[in-house]
Length: 344
Image 1 (cartoon, helix red, strand yellow):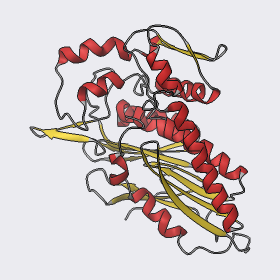
Image 2 (cartoon, one colour):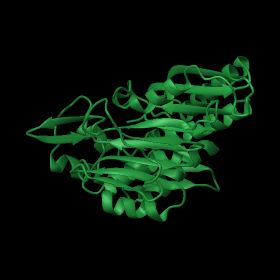
Image 3 (spheres, helix red, strand yellow):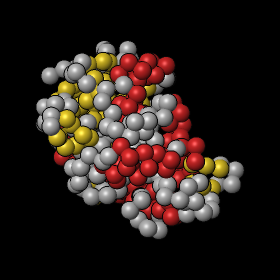
Image 4 (cartoon, helix red, strand yellow):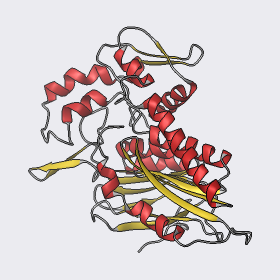
């Protein structure tokens, strides 16, 4: 679910970057009227195509800032990827049922953040759901697992068996066969950290897009905010709504990303940790937040919670906004976004 093969969500969510690319193309002049350079580059990292745009006072600085962003994402991938055997999370998973594993501050921050999102969403977000995801194998298997198969895995997804000891800086999984995967929150965190690296390298503005997880900072030359289009969950390639971002992150979870249909039923990859079945109350959830780690984690958790409970949570959280499309196609928009979004 995390840093595996080329992520299908990139192909489906390309509209999230289309407006950004068109807005950046041909830009000249800083908001102050000084000349600037805009550089956009792409690399395969974290199992998806990562696009970075850097705005700086010269092309050399912009190039250096983009390089710094990619370097930081690669560094975090080496810590967090469950597809790299030597990563910290791989070592944690390998030691499940055995002993605690010492981890870096970055890994601890991501796992703590994931556990916090789990608490906020009533368990809707769960980084231990991997064994059940494998049972469904939505990407390749197209097979509906039996109830007994799923029940046999239930004890392995219990977050009470995940112990993150901040004082000792260790993570311990109680049961053999457990594993944690931060794919639902790690890309947002990586985008946050990449922004910090780009700023240190001299970028005055930019955008980082890891598939559908986008983080912006500053403004485009000329003072424009970064425009983003949100994918329509039932019309591939069409935009549901537009929003302009400044120093914000945006992330979308949708049942259209990875799924198969059988007998008229859509089976997708966003599983409810309580039922161990695909969550059925939403088509898509888009979260806008100041930090990517929260936008990335909350979109999945809110998807599982459902539209009413999810929107109630959003309205209680500072600096968090959301656009939810429920199972029937009804659109719900949080109070802080109603005056900001535009419809095609």
